[in-house]
Length: 137
Image (cartoon, rainbow, N blue to C red):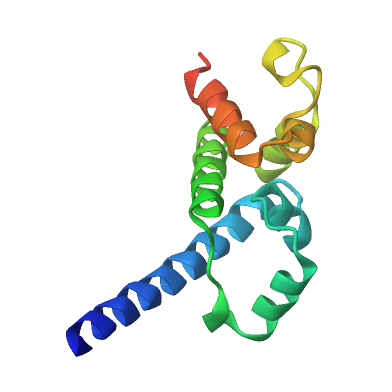
């Protein structure tokens, strides 16, 4: 029984570390897009002000859901793909905030608007990530 408890604690500790790392990388990536922390968290489907405030006071308490981790992974993939095409920060910010008529999947919205307004943050991040990774130069 004691071995099981140690294993649970180790898994929980790893999950907290992974959550902190995911958020740190999300904030670095979305800074290139001109977003603040609150906007970045909202893109990842984290909207509870209580949860955000609690994390601000104690980084040890950060624990993301599986969906939030998956959304962040798609956002980081998206950031990397865009950075390879537009390495300058102002170009990355311009790309995320301007609609591209050649992307009908985005319904006439900018990538940022699409991510913000889509009812499923996970599906929006996944769709946009796949679109950008498949684009030809």
